[in-house]
Amino acid sequence: MSINSKRRDFLKVGASGLGVFMLSGGMTKALADACGLTPAQTSGPFYPGEDKFHQENDLTQIAGKAQATGQIIYLSGRILNANCKPVPGVHVEIWQACATGKYNNPNDPNPAAIDPNFKYWGETTTSHDGTYRFKSIIPGAYPADTDWMRPPHIHFKVSALGYHELITQMYFKGNQYNDADLILKDVPANERESVIVDFVPTPFAQEPNALSGVFDITIQSVR
Ligand SMILES: [Fe+2]
Image (cartoon, rainbow, N blue to C red; front, side, top):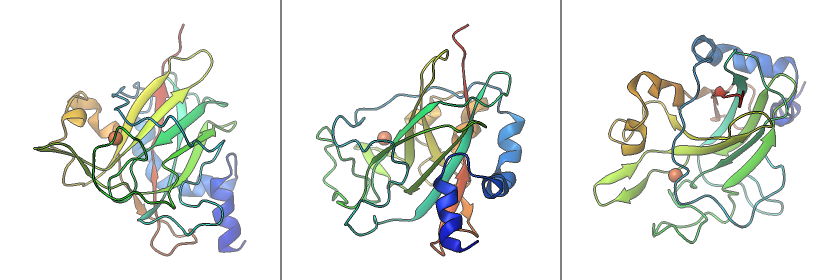
């Protein structure tokens, strides 16, 4: 299998042994505490109202444009229920800032530059084994106030019939702004690690410096 075809397989929901290989390293710890519900966090003011791309899980490439600026990441995980069973057919949306820390949203007062090659928002549906996949970039940190920098993070909205909708945020392990972030600190201390992901080098990626990370999410049944 060529590198390009491996990359395509990664982004296809439901792909195969390659996905299993990729998930095997980072998933061990995540699965160990996967059945505790993923903590909810604020959606923030920058949920996109316009310019959504239908069922698009690659945020790094817009047809006819250059690749988005920033560190490429392959982000995947499984949506689980409280009994640790994967949930297929779950709608997963993400939105985030570009590499400069700017959102494509008129509510964002940050003077940083927009990246015209970045999609800022994506969506996908989990496969039979509850897996979702996105390709994106590490967002920049941005000022939330004069004395508060938000660490790089990706917003998630997870919805499925029969489950409470979950809105949360995912963070990058080791980032200098994590510990002082007022929103991350609002997550109970014993649940904080569940929303912080360790991104590691990715041997199968098209891009030599790409990183991959696994963020498993547990959602709550309405019953
Ligand atoms: Fe944000």
